[in-house]
Image (cartoon, rainbow, N blue to C red; front, side, top):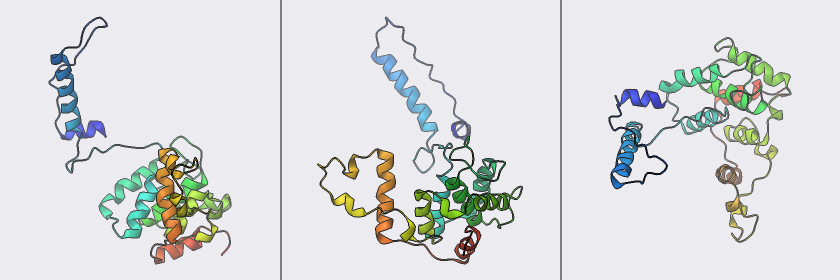
Length: 227
């Protein structure tokens, strides 16, 4: 991605690198040149709308929720479908599933999420590159069906309307009302845990469910071993 942006910006670093020996002092001029060199480089990496995009290509459970949110809110644009599908296909394991990360063996959580993602992107249950959907669905059913998905996956399934909130672990949003002085206050959690729990606790409290579309009804039939 970095090389792509540099190429599109026709970037050429004309400011020479600043090198300082161990016993050499840092002068104002050298510090200024180093700063200008860095600013020129990062300016070339800035997108047209002002943000700096970055790839997080290791975990395979981050892309599907983005597609789910766009689908639920009605903002999924077909222009992105080809690239999304290419990425998902490229990381499917030989047994039909997807790992927790790109080097992992197949895992129920990510296999279910990526299967649903393919279906939302318009791939039929028996279609996809090298029958991707059929192989993924077979892996899911062979490993106990969608009810074996971990709790985080059950939350996403409940949001989509494929699973019922009553089957998820409780995530009461009222915990945020506890005094911040308590050692168990959620604000003291690791940032990644906190950022996940906050929106999920809100959605759990609302028991939010997206639109029940014909596709959602089909997925209910496709992913369970029992009706």
